[in-house]
Length: 238
Ligand code: ADP
Ligand code: MG
Image (cartoon, rainbow, N blue to C red):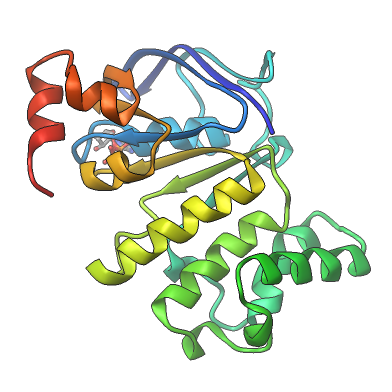
C-alpha cells in the first residue's frame, strides 16, 4: 500500500495547458474517485501518475518519494483498462500472468499469483478459456486480475465499466468495492459518472477544465458543494 501526492502538477500538450497546477494527497488504502466532464483532464492526470505521460511541471510522489523521472515499468502501479484491452489470442491464465512474465518472474511464482488472483476474482473455472468465450463481466474481472497479480502499491482504473451495460455496471461497482475492502490497495478510479463516484468513493476529486473544483467525501460534496459547478455536476442525473 502507499500514499500518493500531487504537488502543483501541470500538463501542456504543445502550447495547450490541460492540467493547471493540481495539488492533493491520497492516503494509504484510500479509494479516491476522479470525476468530471469529458475532456477535463482525468485520464491525463492518471496517465502521469502511471508514468505513461511525462509531467510538464510540479511533482508526483509515492510514499514521500518523488517519482517524476521514474519509468512506468519501475513504478509499483497497475492500471486496469476496459476489458477489450485483453489479449484475444491468450487464455485467461496467460492474460493474467503476462505482466509477470514480462518482468521475468519465476514461473512457479507466476502460477501461484495467478491462482491466488483467480480465487479472489472467482475465475478459477475459467483459466483455460479465451476472452471471446467469456461474458462482459467475466472479461472485466480478468482485466482486474491482470492488475492484481502484480500486487502493486496502487491500482488505477480509467472508466473500466463504460463499455458494460447498465445492470452489469452496477454489479461490477460492487465487485470492485468488495475487492478493495479485501485487498485495501490504494486506488484511484476515474469516471465521468457522478453516480458511480458517489457510490464508490471514500473521497471524490471533482475536476473541471484541468483544475480541481472540490475534494471531499460523497456526503460532504452532496451537503456542501463548494460552488455552482460542483452543485450542478453532483446534482444532475446520470
Ligand atoms: P478526460 O479523461 O477527462 O476525458 P483527457 O485527460 O483525456 O480528459 O484530456 C484532457 C484534455 O487534453 C482534452 O482537451 C484532450 O483533448 C487533451 N489531450 C489529451 N491527450 C492529448 C494528446 N496526446 N495530445 C493533445 N491533447 C491531448
Ligand atoms: Mg478519459
